[in-house]
Image 1 (tube, chains in turn purple, orange):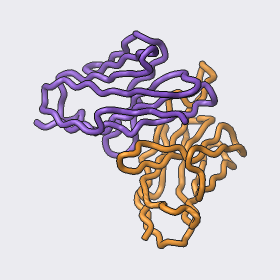
Image 2 (cartoon, helix red, strand yellow; image 1 turned 120 degrees about the horizontal axis):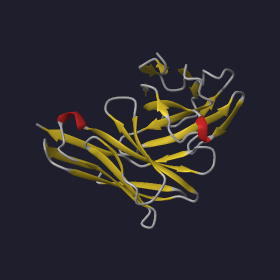
Image 3 (tube, rainbow over the protein chains, first blue to last red; image 1 turned 60 degrees about the vertical axis):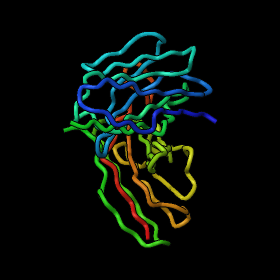
Image 4 (cartoon, chains in turn green, brown; image 1 turned 90 degrees about the horizontal axis):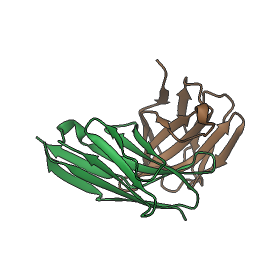
Length: 111
Length: 117
């Protein structure tokens, strides 16, 4: 059975801290790994990673995929209270865009 | 504005009743998806549809049914056979785009929180 595991499950930090969220996966036919941010309701897309070792960056957020280790990390530098959210990792298989999601990491940033 | 709408936001039902959750998109996306989200369990796929009049079961389809009569609409019915229906339900859609790959980037609706007592 395909599996995506995120760690930690929850994290509490103060503004200005740097955080690293982890995602590891075991899927039969890996195609890509995606990160989403869910603040209140709808998850919003952050990154899609397909190639190992290539960092994707958007402002203070960055992510990298390690296909050898079957894992990815999401880094957030200089955290702000607006970064408080659930961060979801999902893996796409080669068949018809099916995504398998991890449990999510709940990030809380205190002022 | 393009997007996905789900209605209602909150829904309360008595045990034993069927209930239908609405999902509409005006993004002209081919594929649509239904997920269920429970605390600590992330999103789990219920059903998905790649084209009109066709749909496939996801990982937890038992007790649910769907239809895809129009490209923009993908309603989900939670039947009385679903043993634990109280949850947050998310609808999503995706487009093949230039890559021809469905689902790589999914756009989500705001969700419906269903409570069954």
